[in-house]
Amino acid sequence: MKGKVAYITGGTKGIGLGIAKTLLGAGMKVAISGRNAEDARSVARELGPEDRVMGLGSHVTRPEDEEKAVGSILKKWGQLDVVIANAGVGIFNPVDTLSIKDWQKMIDTNLNGPFYTLKASLEALKRSKGYYITIASLAGTNFFAAGAGYNASKFGLVGFTQAAMLDLRAYDIKVSTIMPGSVASHFNGNEPDESDAWKIQPEDIGELVEDLLRMNPRTLPSKIEVRPSRPDRK
Image (tube, rainbow, N blue to C red):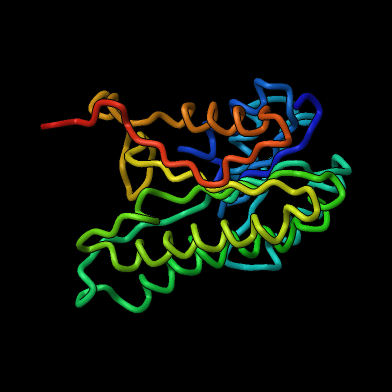
């Protein structure tokens, strides 16, 4: 893993930031993106030196933004080995009150975004025989009330990722989706504190990503469900 290059969307906090820290600790170079370019650059400066970390502004709902981000990574480091489509949004309302705007926001971010990220990075991944990972959710296989839009986006993301895996292994590109349950992150406006101690921590997902990258190339865990081992019963 040392010296390889990773790109993480939604990498300024939460799961994305946890993954970034883990991969940096493993010796990789890491680019993180967020909707606010200055925020992304500020987080990158906190993570490490400029020769190992870069922060990029990108709205994953805009294909041109993802193309520009990948272009910046290739210009700086000349390669791209790992792409992690992590950026996501959740809005939870019953289907009769869910607005068209909120539906579109979730589909654009959670489903279209990972497609745009993959399209922007695909030629670089073909050259490096790299790895593409999406961060989905247990909501991609378990439906629930007030989750119509979120379920639709995550069910779609799981299906997209699994089909892409079948397409891209012909190029020796590995593709996996990780489906976390409750994570102590900033998702849906949460501010993590001691009450989130029972949840999966962002660094746990980072450790899982590192395990995937270190796995023998002959083996591909293509869909991974991960849950808190001791859920809160309060």
